[in-house]
Length: 343
Image (cartoon, rainbow, N blue to C red; front, side, top):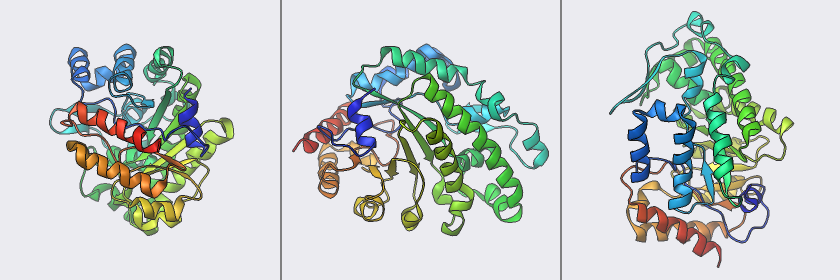
C-alpha cells in the first residue's frame, strides 16, 4: 500500500501532503465515458470487475493522484438487499419499491446474506490491487446508513427529505430498524472490502445536513461510529475516513474511533482545525467549482496549506468533481497540492 498516504491518515510525517479527489472516476474523463459506453449502462459497469478496475485506475494514471478510490456506487447495498434499483438518464437512481412500513423492511435480506452478494465489488478490488502501483493506496467506501436509508425510503434523490423525515418524527422506531438493518450489512460489506485488499475505508454521509443538529447523532452519526468501532476491533491498522457533508454547526459534537475527518467545502478549514484538528487528521476541502479556473484552484490550495501547514492533513476536494471540469485543470490541482506541500 502507499505508505505516504496511509501514514498521513494516521497523522505521521510524510514527504509531502498526499492528495486524491472525490468521485475520481467520472464523466470529466473521456476515457471513462468510453468504457461506460462499452458497458451499456452505469449498473452494468458496476457489475463488471474488469471495466470497474479500468475506470478506478484511470485517474491515477491520467491525473496523478496519490490514491485510487474504488469504482462502485453506494446504492449497490440496497440493491443486493433486494430493492429494485434503476438509474434513469437525466434523473438519477430510482427505487420502484421504497420502504413504507415494517413489512417492506422485512422482505429485504440483511447481514452476511446481503453482503455476500456483492462479490463483483470484491472481485474488482482484487483486480485493482494486482494492477495498482505499490506507492498508491486503494480507498474503499460505503454510504452512511442515514444516506442509504433516505434513498430507500424516498425512492430517489430528494431536496426536501420529507418522507424520511416524516418517519423520523412520526415513526422513529421504524426508522431505527431500517438504520440498524442497513448498518449490519455495511459492517460486513466493509469487512469484506478490507479482506479483498482495500487500504483505507471512507464512510460518506452525503445527506448529513438534512438532519437538525439535535437529532444528528441519534439518526446518523452513532451508526457511523458503530461501523467504525466494528472495523477497528478487527482491523486496527486500516485507517477510517468519516465524511459527513454540511455539518459545520456541530463539529464540536464529533466523536469516535477513526483517523480522518473529511471537511466539505462549506465548512471553513480554520474552523475544522480549531474544533477537530487536535483529534483527527483533516481531509479537504477545496470547493469543486474552483477547478474551472486554474487561478482559483491555486488560490484555494495555497489558502488551505496556509491554514493546515501540511500537518495532519490530506488534500482533497470538498465534494465530488463535476463532469465538465477540464482534465488539465484537474491535473493542475494535483500539481499545485504537491508543490505547496513541499515548501
